[in-house]
Image (spheres, rainbow, N blue to C red):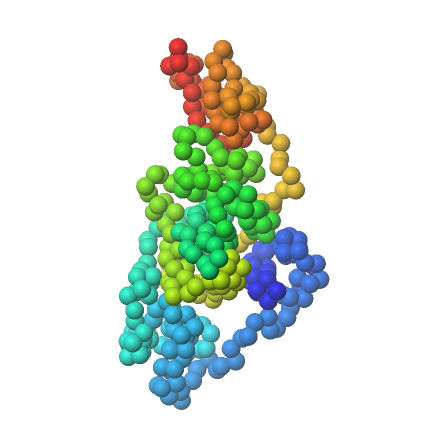
Length: 363
């Protein structure tokens, strides 16, 4: 509950935030929302003075070591930034680094996790979400498959869910909860594996059909190019160093408890070097596009040739039987003639082009 309050207040305090809509998404009344916003102490806030001219070096060292003990994968730059932000202690990064070295706290794993990745960044939150599974790992009872979704612009973690497999249904349920709280993104990028990718070129999966039906554009990384989802891959490296390293979980619920705790730290407390040591929450805004109560009707233009996908994922066009994918069975698709080629059509489902066909080549 405390984590929910903190997240609500952080998002509702942003400039131009729609507080009423956020109250609806968080399942609270407006009265409760404004009560949370007006409370002085939602979290344990530091009451240390802004400056401490008489503080002894030993006490400074103890503060550096204490932050490192709480967050073993954080480097000197993060620690110095947090001490200044939360305690008013001004310390050079080099000083914090020296303290870590004196105490034997510089480890190769932490250094690798702190290596920055330079990536293209979308201009606004929710322009692109990156989705992937963290490589599975064992618990004492089952294997855990961690589903992660990251906002490209802010690095805000949207979803961190411990699942027992990589099937469509639990993934769709996790995304539905995310859409209900944060709204719909413009686009989601995924790799080419299930449940969002399909081995057949141009074909959609059931999850892909659902996303596109909601008005979300779906894109896929090029095969063998995981760096296309580089920010989510970087998130996985931080997760390795700060959550998984040296830790064993009893079951999925135990893993989820640790995930929830770290997600709160990652989004709201942990400085992120790629965004100028800000926290992801300071750059994130929920999407104005709310999750609809039901899927919107599919509509096409007057010049489109519309076909209903039948058994086997096939349609008929000008005497030809064409396969467009089993995930689209029962859906209506549109064929749009290509202006520069007779007999050639682009095939669309809702807003998304899924393939192209050339009837002349089939004769």
